[in-house]
Length: 95
Image (tube, rainbow, N blue to C red; front, side):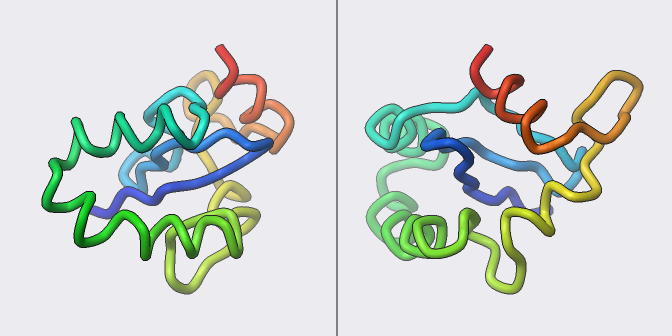
């Protein structure tokens, strides 16, 4: 299942389509680059990262056919898999 790179409030993070929630804390772009290299490897970074991050900068997510708002609208990021608001997700990312 895919993981998307997402951006909210100038924080970059991974979003899991399996759990429909963020699976990393929010990071600056520089922090996220380092995380991405470590998590996915230098080859993936060199071959995919810049194309994916371009989509993130354009629409808030690396997903091809969705916006950040559509991705987070039916999330399960809250307690007992409840849906969090965009502001609550931002608070969660800042932890």
